[in-house]
Length: 340
Image (cartoon, rainbow, N blue to C red):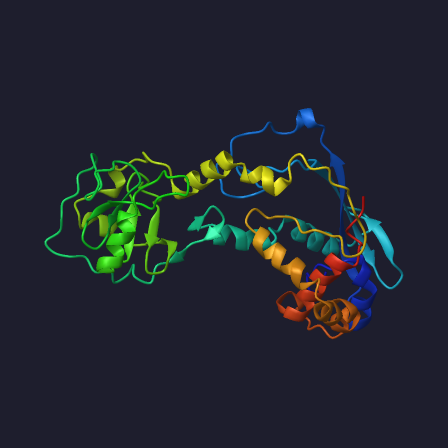
């Protein structure tokens, strides 16, 4: 309770011997399974994410948690339930403030969610601030749009440099557009386009052909005003790219493939058989980490040498790469967290 670092019981004695800090707030969460009839009913996904509210849901059991707190004092491992009149007022106050504080991870997540694409942080386009917009500007009507090359009336993208309206890319199943917006970029190199029908006062799908990614355009209202469009007056009439991807994933059964639906799988547990929980958009990172920690050199560097790395860790291990990799190695390879 001096440094406010979170430490597991396995390393607590080692931490005490290194620092001399011996007073800890213990937070124990007891897991209780929620019966299926009390769980949320299946709903159609609204986010391109896994295992989070609004995303694709797994068949995992659902749980609620009961939290117990106590004060632990080393080296005697003396433990007192919290709150208790056996604890000094100063210690009571300190523990109360810790429990009331919003943890750092949640604060960072909340900050990062501003300008995200369903959990994926959108970059501000490098073209946004000084985007070239041609004069005289076209005046774009508030509705009735169609592709200037093929007449398509859906999946239309407004080029923010010259006001051209062209259809988007063709999807693998033949739906979507005829690639005219992409072809036009390849001809003129005007980088930014916004998807018509997704524009509201608070959001819009903006794509940078030069950066080959969905991006954020902080100056979108100004860029649209150049063409006589009042962003505050627009309403969403088309599916966003996220919604389209969700529809496609459901149509082709990709979610069932990921879940290995219909397969008879044998549960395994023990060292090396620990998975990583998906945070909604972390599946790619999880798979990379699991591959890396199957490499003997990584196992020796971060798992076999774990005690040495923890002993030599700086006073702020949360910002130390080696310590964090060692924690991950211990989680994946020790078997402590892999039990039937």
